[in-house]
Amino acid sequence: MKGYHNYKSPWLLVIFLIIGGIIGTIIGDALGTIPSLAILKEAKTIGIPATSLDLHVFTVSFGLLLKLNLLGVVGLLLGVLAYRRV
Image 1: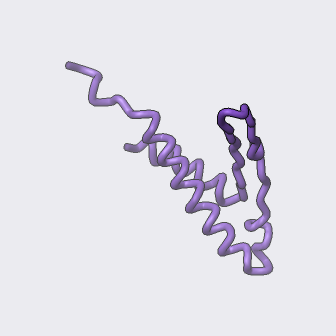
Image 2: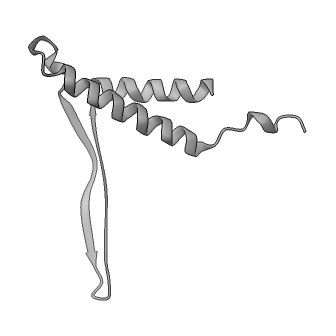
């Protein structure tokens, strides 16, 4: 059956993005302690803060925040490139 061996799971892309973002952010935070590279540590937080919905029977909490710095974005891009090469 031709063509089935080229299928890539979207979950694999999510894993690569998470790993790339985490590694990039850690490296950016570590290098940001050097005064001349302080810009690497600056991060922007985007997303939805934690919100709770109390329905008296149960409570639902949800939220998603992304803290991205310069090397975190580079890590995300490298994650996409690694996914394409797999």
